[in-house]
Image (tube, rainbow, N blue to C red):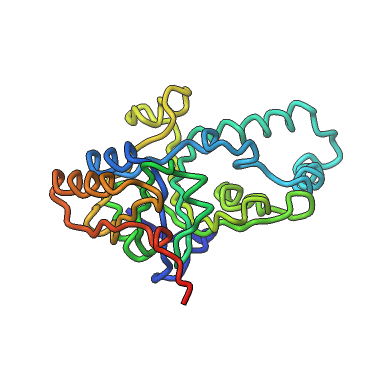
Length: 251
């Protein structure tokens, strides 16, 4: 279920959110009635969950407070860095694009032209849709200069709520859950042992999906296919063609 968290900055309740995907992921969503949360280290950005150069420069100063006059062993810094990398395996993320309108860039980046689909919702519906027992935290991503910005270190979630400026076009809102290894949780153990790429979290699709939008250049038969799959799973959310497929107005 959704829970508030002090380091997460959620968008307004009426903020419009989009999840761009291909047809297979759409079918999987309806079949499983769950959202897939990917491991942070599998998202494709090597900087995911890292700190800035300013953090690195200041870290010995912070650590020296604990060691006093003693020299900080080189192994301590290395073990700390290795631990930060490993925790990414247990940090699971589901990403959405905040925008009142469709995004041509997001269509190109995260869906295929012939079978692209976008799930449209708002933040209130998104947070209310989680039907799982695990704690789900949601917040907007801040885009910062990794040369000069200090990423807060008081809470480990902070490093997953910051990205480089070059990703600012994503206007990303993230849902995050951490699953650290516990003997009675097979999924968390598999995550930590690098056996699986993420986990599914149950959602109420009747709350989550306000509209399904079909990619602007998808063929007409694809629109009908998406509608038929919706009917097969007994949902009635609207399925419409992208407005970017509309003809331009000249007079």
